[in-house]
Length: 249
Image (cartoon, rainbow, N blue to C red):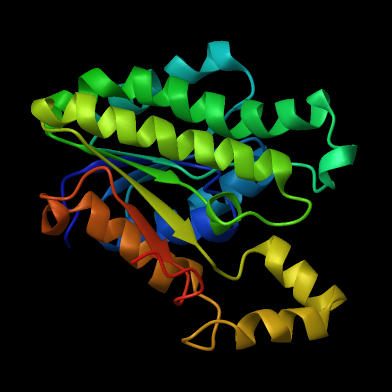
């Protein structure tokens, strides 16, 4: 129960990797607010995880910047505090660079970078009170580059840069900011595996641990660590939770 008596917001938490993080947080004792655009799926996930602990669902379009402060306000009204903000949601169009339009770039930034930035600003005064932390999601596609991932990688690297600045500025207030770059079996990866089994097998062959990460046990476990007192002397760091695919040391 590393997160007992704490409260966390997890964006995109109705499915995939973010759902794994939300599940791990609830099992670690946290009250969790799941934010997602899909009401039916969000309510179903909240009901499922509600059997494990306090869970609340907020339907929100993260691209609607005006709605973002309300997510933090509703969380604090319901649970009385905020200890961890997990910015995991992200949408993007997979296009080659010369096919990437300003509109495609805007999708990645409107669903990833801008919500991360504005939710961090809204959460900051509450995180100062609790000595809390922010966990943002980056990607190896941003760090090393990947075909068709121009907009996605650009948004993710912007998030990492923002995270490093926040870690420096907010550290004196006791607020930590770290980044996770995951490789896990999300719905998108599952669809890719079914459509391109040989390419998937080749990808796994390039992972030193020879498997893909589990959203709850692997990615969620790392997130619980970053949210807990076990990592109280860590900030401004990027954790590659990818089985060793990208070796940054």
